Length: 151
Image (cartoon, rainbow, N blue to C red; front, side, top):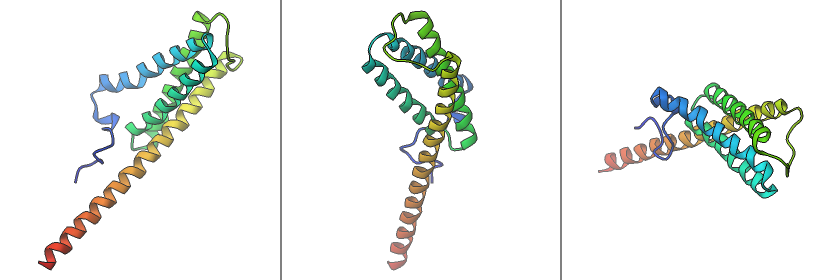
């Protein structure tokens, strides 16, 4: 039996170190900066960017099967996201269409906590899906054994 359900992504720990680093650092930095830039565009763009960021934080948890790894990944991603959001706000936004936490460092703390919780939720869902797939495979194997015995 494979060590993971076929529909689940490979674990981040199974990927080469440069890929691991890139997956943990690049998306939150770019996503945070783009989300911060939307503060100067429209409320709709700000909301959409935050929905996408939330989805990204949740899906990052799917790369892990251990909660400690997911919490560290979520905290790092959330912190990087929040810091780059604040940086974009300071560098490219003239007139805000939405507010962020004040002082701005609080925004990074909020996104760090949110990133941690989202990644933990993603890992929990991954583990549930993997357990269900494993149980289904076990039941399928039991059914095959019964059919073989009947013949």
